[in-house]
Amino acid sequence: MDDVTKLKRLLHHWMEHNDEHAETYKEWAEKISKLGKGELSDILLKLHVESKKLKDLFQEALKACEKFQ
Image 1 (tube, one colour):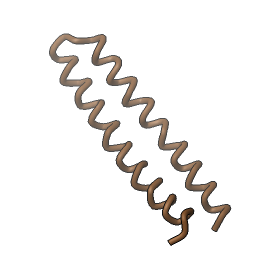
Image 2: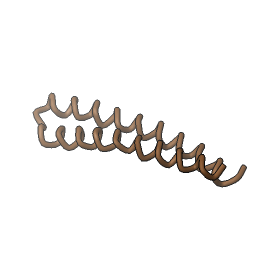
Image 3: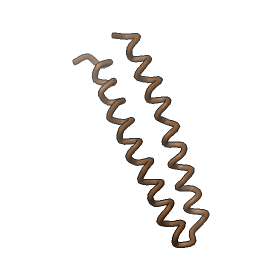
Image 4: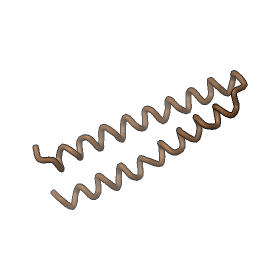
């Protein structure tokens, strides 16, 4: 397997794993909010939002890989 093919597989894996983490941040933000920890909840929600934005960069990297195949 060449390095670009390996990288594509890794990018798919990282993207999926990132999405899973993003959902966990959101779940914890909701739990922490119920405890009255609004500031911490807001930070976790920001982590969720920013992590979801990374999906676009993962897709951009995958598209760039296609140029080398």
